[in-house]
Image (cartoon, rainbow, N blue to C red; front, top):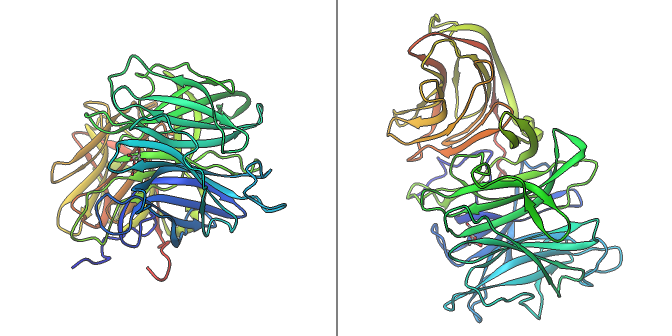
Amino acid sequence: MTTDRYRPQFHFTPLRNWMNDPNGLVYFDDEYHLFYQYNPYDTVWGHMHWGHAVSPDLVHWHHLPIALHEEMDTGITMFSGSAVVDWQNMSGFGNPGHPPIIAIYTGDHRPAPLEDIHIAYSTDHGKSFIKYADNPVIDVGNPKFGDPKVFWHKRTAKWIMVNILGHEQGCVVLYSSTDFRNWTYLSRFEAPDVAPAIWECPDLFPLAVDSDPGDVRWVLKINNTDPAGQQTWYFVGDFDGTTFASESTAEEAVGRDYGEIYAEMTYNGIPAADGRRILIGWVRQKPSEDRAWTGAQSIPRVLTLRTGDRGLVVCQTPVGEMERLRQEHHHWESVTLPEMSPESAPRLIGGEMEIKAEFEAGDARDIGLRLQMSAGGWARIGYSATDGRLFVDQENGKRVDAPYSLTGRVLKVHVFIDHNLIEVFAGDGETVITTSLAPDPLCETVEVYTEGGTAQLIALDAWRLASALESTQ
Ligand code: FRU
């Protein structure tokens, strides 16, 4: 018997069955589209389709019917890809004044080990898609070739496609087109100094350094299936319309979200007046008999590029729209830890919360937040001065951590708790941990804690968050 007891209230989850990568993130006519890798038959991976949801604000999502179905006759399933609005109808798939949405995706052939690039278009705002009759539009005869991210490159007036190629030493290959049907090979990007591994889900986009519009870099994001743990890497460099050249080495390019997040993708079509680079990632989960679904999408985040102590850092912060869910507010300041009376000790009750906390680390060995879980166990979101790491750990021994150096002995964290899903943004978002507490306990109370010394809670703001679920859920 499965129940909805463990359903996160403000993370997107499928109503039932398996979900992995976000696909086709595109904003069009006041709607944020979220397509996703979806198995409509089971809570485990398989039979990839593109599921679909839309949102007016990146917070409240409305479930829609499946957008792309697997092909029973050809044995092709719908792997990851992207979507764009073809404003000038360069594809000819739209009608005057009515641009089409074009989905560009990986066709995965079974049983043949082959992947190629397919396109499909929608002339009804993404409600339904028609697959192009002459698919595939690119076939290089490789079993691992795809996850196309397509975007409009203004200076060369071309559509650019960034793909992954290769099973052993993954690399990125770039193509361009002016009609979506014909693609010209441009270049390839490799990182020879990294251990051979499959790369997946590339993305390429410009970001201004420290918000200076006169100093723009291009960021190449890839996922790496390193056996040591699936990761996300960001390479910072330049893209001249043909070639991406990285300024950073693979060592410096290690992802800044150290948790169970993967296959992140940024939105196409965000209006210039908004100008944000918005990213969503898949929060990996194992199937559980207690849930009717598997997998969640992260809180949408804004990416920025900042100058840190060791060079440029891709930072992630939750989109401001999340504030729409804020309910009762609690505030504490200037509390010495651990010397608190029960009355002065910050204590929050509930399973859906946003917390912004600032600690002066003092001589404490450990500081942070302690969560009491419904099943009786505990979890902690903390900073360990002993080894300089930010961490989320649990009574059952599960620990996710990240190297982190405090600025002036001050720890600043922005935390979202959604039943058992935890997102921690430290500092200005230069280090992030997204994780799920296992096996599906629910958070009941949160307190601050310190161990091995004293510390000062400079300030703590907390809000109970409203549910963002549709009333049918
Ligand atoms: C990443 C990935 C992609 C692929 C899809 C299949 O999680 O393996 O490379 O297109 O998932 O579901």
